[in-house]
Length: 65
View 1 (cartoon, rainbow, N blue to C red):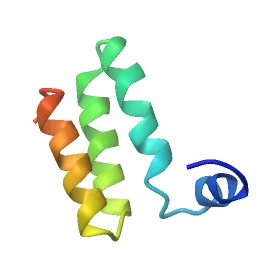
View 2 (cartoon, rainbow, N blue to C red; view 1 turned 60 degrees about the horizontal axis):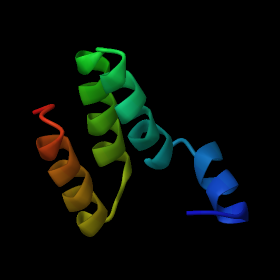
View 3 (cartoon, rainbow, N blue to C red; view 1 turned 90 degrees about the vertical axis):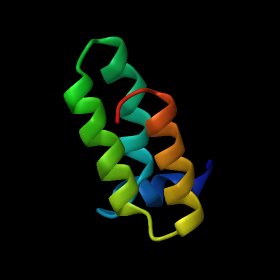
């Protein structure tokens, strides 16, 4: 996601992008519980079943389940 649409998305309360972006830095810092919460927030905020599936697979592959 890029351009004006990205900025608008980040301003919306229901945007999943920001929590999803936070996951890796939180994991690198050893803050696994916060990373799991970020995954869960991202999954909950997207209304698309396809995007939820991608996020769930990412969560499982990252070992944060």
